[in-house]
Length: 296
Length: 271
Image (tube, rainbow over all chains, first blue to last red; front, top):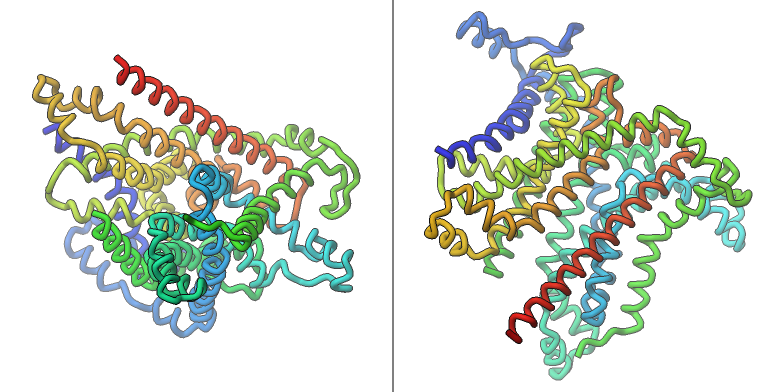
């Protein structure tokens, strides 16, 4: 009996506030926009019983999805979200790997401090960390005035409100997610393997490519997914650092909902976004599973 | 022997400079007397004074703190229950769905979580306000709590619980007297994580907040959309200060606890 209550409470909470809301999104994505409250038809009227339910089902259609495929804006937004997420994941990997590598090679008594320094920014507000770059990257910002003062450029560079600023923002805010899994893979590595490789005639660089990188593969994969998956749906970074040319689907969905008040289209956008993310999410879970099995 | 090369030193220096300089600059410029970002016009605490008189910000801060305290507390209770169910309850009908619902919110884009909860609240006719933000925050943060707590539950020796049961404890007593003290550090860090996530959340709060309740991140976002504002610099500095203080305190406390534990262990060995 007690066991049942223990299971039921969190179970029902998640059913009511996670699964049901998601089914509502699915349902509204199949509805039509209407000038009404709520602004879509049909609404489910259970007082008419089974007949009412059948009438309700017959009015649902894929119209919003067809419309999404015909409107260029959405295709471009999906493609460019995936492209921006992909490029920024690679950039984060390039920036994060050397840091994780250096941390794993630091003296053991230093490692907890270094680890805390990597995690600390994670506890400060995401919004504030993104905002901090606005003052640095703007036309009158610190970076431009610094570059002009040392005479590298004469005109300010436009960085804020471009995709470059979005990449900088993503690398900055998601760097800890890349560093931590790579660090934990590298830390476990047995150094005698490198010595063996060098004894067998590898140069240090060859030993790095042939031994270190393959041994940290799991960490690299985990880090890349931890950056890629959330960045595809990112909203704050493109709206604060990106410009009018930065198309990202999280921003489109937000605006579709709040500015155009088009609930069915916003819901359809959400459903497709989730479909796009299912593949990387499943791959990520597999990678984690494999790692657990390797350890257990 | 590991070799810490010059290249390693350079990557660490550059990496930490990249991670910390933007925030240090933000803190320095919050004390700038000028409204312009690039012009340094001398030290001043003017923006802090103006911030403290801005009632809209103070109200939003109060709402945010209340939401964070309540939602992270409920989330910790629910998340710990969920973790216990996942690790200890064995097989039951719908277990796969249950663990799916625990892990899915962790990877779900915030815009989708926010949108779906808003549609639910409108569907059942619940007015948007503090209550709806609390419900939304509890739901996604309980999943984080349950991941943190279940990783601790997995690693601890189940025979301790069984011993308590054999000695006549009820299952609840065994949980309270044996399990809870052992998983307490994970429960506390789960609460802290839930609290920070709630303080920090912009997207889900934007969907679930109504005109009667605005949180601080929503306020900050609408203020900085148009550009850099010195008042927000001051606010950010206060928030960074609180976090830094909190983390330093937490690490000192845990260090002292581990020293005490070591001392006790040594004393036990001597005795």
